[in-house]
Length: 139
Ligand code: CMP
Image (cartoon, rainbow, N blue to C red; front, side, top):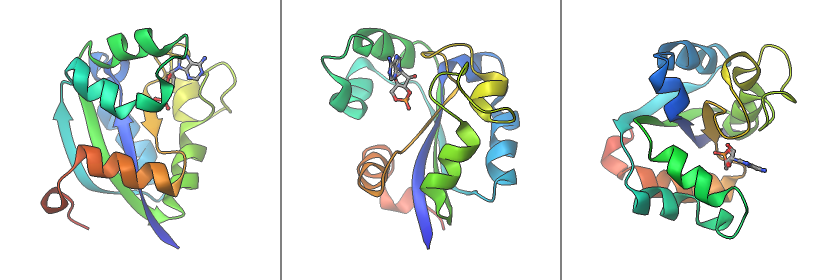
């Protein structure tokens, strides 16, 4: 079924000016960008988005990294968009990611892994609601 998912192009990717290369991979995988904006998160934005990771050993570094530069927030739409996006992103750690995936080709390490994608329909709904107003999504 057609689904929507939230995608983030992370600071390590905007810094290297490869947002377009990443978007081409997403579009090439059959995903359609139906909302997009470039933002620089404040600490409170990153903390709200990643609240489920609070307490993890990587949490502090994650918040620091995600507020270290501009990011690109997107809503992607397509058949099985959540699974499709996760497949084209590859595994969280670039060294484990499959050849041809975004994280394998562009990711630097577990933290600087270039992209985020929602991991379930519940997460997608929550993350899209946190990042976009209804009027900003043009499907
Ligand atoms: P993301 O999909 O944005 O969700 C949380 C992020 O935390 C994850 O991608 C990784 O970039 C980062 N992270 C850093 N260390 C870990 C870890 N040990 N396990 C999972 N995620 C990690």
